[in-house]
Structures are given as structure tokens and as C-alpha cells.
Image (cartoon, rainbow, N blue to C red; front, side):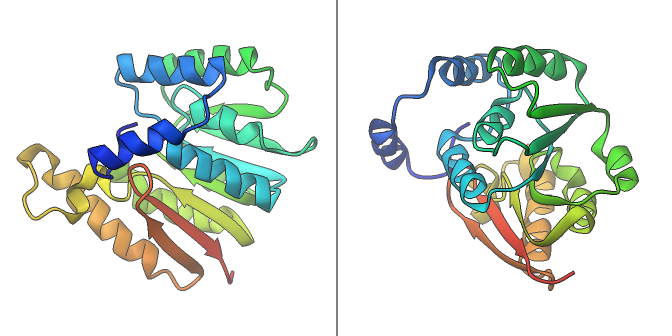
Length: 215
């Protein structure tokens, strides 16, 4: 959940944050204590606003972890809308299912267990909104699958595109060099995809937002 803004800026923004409800606060604390990567709260608020405003009927989440963003998305959906969430970790799925049940959103969120790289090529119906937050080494392939599944005028929201600040850093720690290079190359692809109107915003860990302007 750590953001890429300066520490004093992050602290200031946190003081302005409206207090989250008990379940969201519990999930954030669990993720922090157990080092589970979830969407930064500030980026999550942006995600909620986009979902609420675009009124998607079908949403796809690729990499749901413990269901933090799933719940935040589903709470913004209209009555007949649905979120399909792909996750391959059995441990995460068990935790997410319990949180989703407590949130009383089992009718809005359908968990799809397995590897997104295997699941997505078999999917036929398209989506109005796609949230990508999976293994970074798979981003390029998952992005191409996402474009095929995204409707025209649909929105794609992608997390971690500034990669803890390393994407813009001159000196990158050795253990982060490979992942940083992957993100840098992906960002070029994302911003130069002809079918998308796209941008990267320095919120949270850096989020990419794209609107599909052509098939």
C-alpha cells in the first residue's frame, strides 16, 4: 500500500482521508501486517470514482489478492452489475471469500480460481471496465488479453506503473532491476497503444488509466 509521493505529502493526505469503515480498515491492517500487496487507499478512491461514474455492467479484476479492491469496486456497482475476479492463490481466495461474505457482496463478486493467462484466452464476453493488478512479469500478455476483452469506450485501470518510484529512478537496487525494466517497457507499450487514450497518474504506486477509443 505504500505510495510514491513524498512522505510528508502522504502524511498530509492521510490526515484528510475520511475514516474508512471497519471492514476496509481491518483489511488494510491485515495487508500491512502480513505484507499482502493491495491497492493504495488513495488509488482505491480514484478507482471507486471511475467505477461509480462509468456505471459498468461487467467488470473484470485480474489479481484480486484478499479482495480489498474487489469489495471497493463492487460497492459502486449498480444492482444488476457483476464483478469477475481472477486469483490463483488458494490462500488469498479463502481470505477474500470470507471478507466478501462479511461485506454481503457474494451476489456481486464471482471469484474465478486459476491463472489469468490460462483463463482469459477462453473468455468470450466483453467487459466495460478492467482492473489489472497481477504479477508484473505477466503484464504485457495480460494487457493484450485485456484489450481483446474490453468494450469500445471501456476503461482499463492498471496498478504499480511507477513501481515504488523505481521506474523513474536513476539508481535501482539490484533485486529490483528486472521488475523495474519490465514496468518501464510496459509503460511505453501502454502509452503508445493506438486503440487506447491513456495516461499514467502519480497516485498510490502509479496508476495507468486507459479508455478504449477503437476496436
